[in-house]
Image (tube, rainbow, N blue to C red; front, side):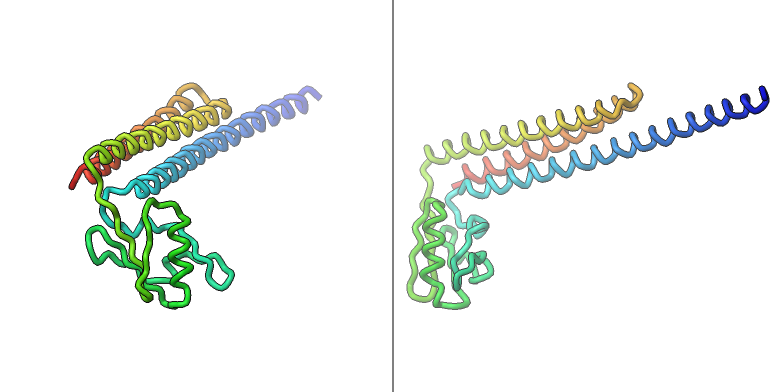
Length: 210
């Protein structure tokens, strides 16, 4: 009888140890997923920052300013870029030549309603947008604007870091493993903060170049 009891205790001990190993492996796997998801979120934050930077114009024509514009085409909201050939014939001019001339007016209307700070015109075949030149004072104002956008981007990264560290904490890992996870998250935010600084520097140079 005592022999049987010893066997049961031994099996229980082995099983308990096995369950602990499986649980820890699962927790480590979850931490890797947290790190991966954290980087994906940071990448999306950088993309959002880039899109905001695009909308801060430097007084030169950039077809990307038309991204996201939808045109009412036969009752369907259709991306402008799928309806026309967009080019930059001059440094401060954008040309939009529709594949179907019947949507010329709808394109002009969509651009006007997008509140881009420009006034579209057409000659019966092509819609033209002339980008107004920037004064020195206006350029400095735009530099302040992009600095604020960059700071918002850094705040977004810090929020993502906070969420990641909280998620790692909830895994209840050994102290050294939790620290490893926190360090990886810190490495990510350092890397993406540098990316923001580089993009800000490029945008400032772009805005101040006449």
